[in-house]
Length: 254
Image 1 (spheres, helix red, strand yellow):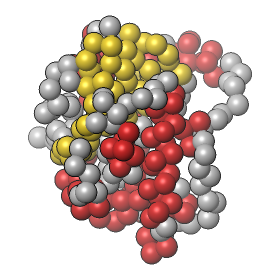
Image 2 (spheres, one colour):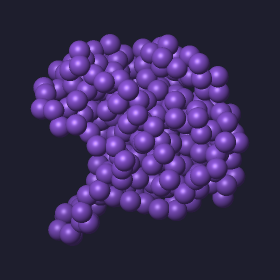
Image 3 (cartoon, rainbow, N blue to C red):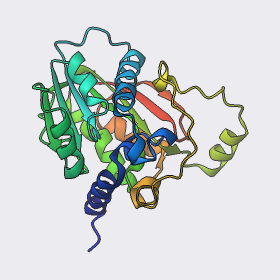
Image 4 (cartoon, rainbow, N blue to C red):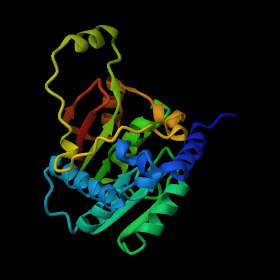
């Protein structure tokens, strides 16, 4: 019987072995494994972490616990470790986690976890102050699994805890979908990369990365995402980019 979680695990392991850097930040400058500037890669993750926390309005986080869904090789995790008292870093890929541990073995406040690919075990219930996920949930191949992560976010957050989750959504209703396409959208701004400018270096994407099923991922109907959030007993503080690839949900647990 086909198990989508095992397929995702296998494909992410293959991506990690072929080019983990491009698999995590798919920019031209990271496409050629032989010429990657690793310091720029890690710097891009630090900038991203700071921008995500700023988007949440968080400043003083030193006494808090964070959960990162899809930590990869620790691109963002190392900066979260600097800013939080404790970090749970989960990834479905044992290969990614092994690489993260090898690179960031000095980080004593990070719990590296090979996750199931569908939940946030073994993070205890009501133990996290912040849950973050960026460029991860849109690579999940089954919408039901994305919805499971939304519900799990509600499980692990403390009362008053907050989350910022990035996913790919689509309007479920055909009429609403067509109407949304006709609306004039504001100019696109990659606020999450503010302060870091990717280098434009035309290069062929690694074929073993972009040919995988996880690279295509899935889209989740907006209505289904909102119902999952309600089922998790979370409040939506802000919903941005609904019906697009760049959907951001800012959530709070009452």
